[in-house]
Image (cartoon, rainbow, N blue to C red):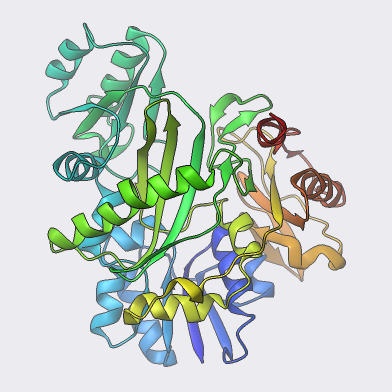
Length: 422
């Protein structure tokens, strides 16, 4: 069986390593992949947004199944085009991927179907937004409507910060057309939880919960990044919270999308905040999170490809998805200076005995050697009986990986460990 995976980051590497476990898989293509992924799949230099070229390649190679992993090609309709060519896919069609592609759509859907989320206002006019901010409660959250590489959200601690964010998005167009509309919403408080789910449009099966560490610096300081590490499960996601989320958020979201004629199949990611009033949705993603995938999939005991095919075929059941009771920790090794300016092109040394625990995000390959080629270079994941031991092992492995200008946070898992001890 030939499988094609669209994308080229750490998330895709984790997906590919898990798919490889299925004995029916004979070949995996990664488009475009990266230098590290090239050790586990055939990388093809076709960009993730070049949908016509992806479809042509899939047809030429006789691909049996495709996994569209990143947000951009999903929102652009990659699944639609591949399915029209007769290639079954994991991932939502464009009309369902709008759940991540437009924050305005997502907020309006939640309001219409009474799914708990922060109070909000939508603006197409900059002056109206600025006028609203003159009396809005502070802190507040300003969001660009469209995709912005995970950077289109600003938590403004002052009125001036909020107004600057509005001008950056709507006047300076720092996120391009994504800032033509903006959402200004209530600032919520409480622990954040990421829950990825499998769904075939009817059944929703949550994966193990996780906790991301978005800020660049220890103690959650510094700039927001794509994620500096993750742990799973998240200690704040109790059985009682999980039950409420299923009844009040997960199933209502799937039912709402069906009611709108936008059936969602694939992986639906719920970014949640456990507020004093209960769990609320901060954001939806229409795909696996990065780096949440790097801790969630190592805990999956079931066969990933079989589950993915069930989401496509509408045959997903709860008992198909089994997770280990263990804990996982992923530590990201980044290039010094990330998420702003950083150098690349440095050789990477990874001991062969830990390769199966390493997920490469930004690396190129030359003469059989890996070189840094991105802000987030790689992640290393440990699985253990306790979170404490998983954290220890992840950092022990990170210590064995070397490249010039390497940077990592030293406190991944610290907040979860503290919460677990309360």
